[in-house]
Length: 131
Image (cartoon, rainbow, N blue to C red; front, side, top):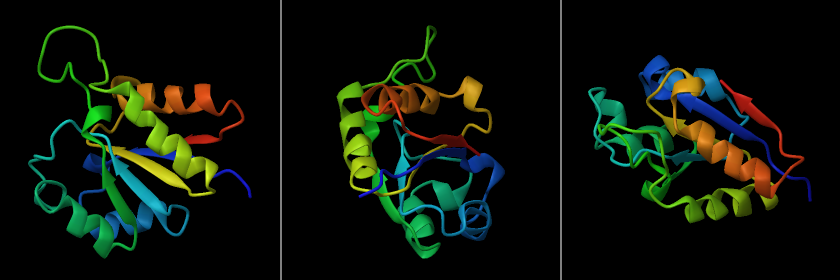
């Protein structure tokens, strides 16, 4: 079985379930929400995130432990529970195409970059696509 591809994106540039479909099309099987909390100024990605993602045709999983524990605090980005990256790695090994989702539009300023590095450490041949 072929390994999946890891995608990353920030929903702030997507804004709706329709926008999610336009961005990801049929490339992704599972969207992993890597926010430490699911509150957002964009209602479709606040308490309705699972409904929005599943309505767009994707499986949804929230891994709070992959959220930025430094969010709203001074200091560097750090993952709340980096061991939860194994869930993402297992899905990729099983051939699932996975997208890491956070609000941040810029990967270089977002902690999902840390998650993608952990996945690549476990799977050095992994393709990572930042959208």
